[in-house]
Image 1: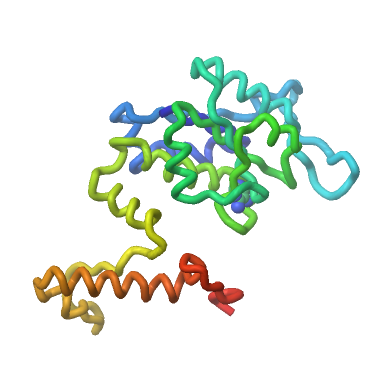
Image 2: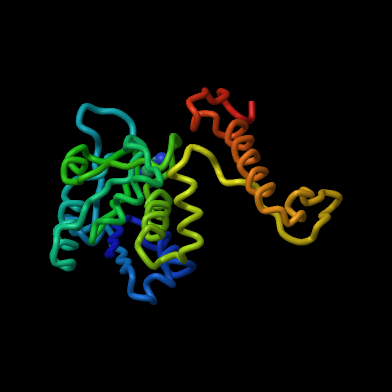
Length: 234
Ligand code: ADE
């Protein structure tokens, strides 16, 4: 699968593409990652990519032309039109299911906005406007990194069978993962639950099931149709 990321700050995404699971997936030939500097697609000789908003208001808006040109250049290089996604806080919510759907595309372009916003005609050029959550980042770069890694994990072969089964169990059912423990048996006075040392697989399975539901009700009651407290920290 081919990923093209279009951004004013490619330097933010270089380490993301260069390490960890994404490095391994590229080395195995399972994915390609191409970073593009949006400024290079500006029709303006000074590389200007933003302008004041029609109708007035504070801040600057990103112009549509550099994004349009970037998408055309990517389509030419990839030999096909990529599925184009604009990262923005106004987008539909990114989930594991969205990642799984995106991973079926042969080519995905992730466009990162900055400033106060992006000209709405960029949305029209894209197939999807996507938000990673209900908060506002300074730009789409970190959101693109999240979508890139999550989607790449869904490309067959990128993660081992064990890890992909664990992901499946997270997003196929409403409950979260169960608590995990490793050595030492006692850490700063906190003991590993006795049942995990019992060797009784049926008892362990039932304990994990119960603890997973307990954690779900405590941290994510919305997953089972209950309401969340206004803020967990308040
Ligand atoms: N750009 C700024 N905030 C964002 C968010 N929450 N998701 C995607 N892109 C963004």
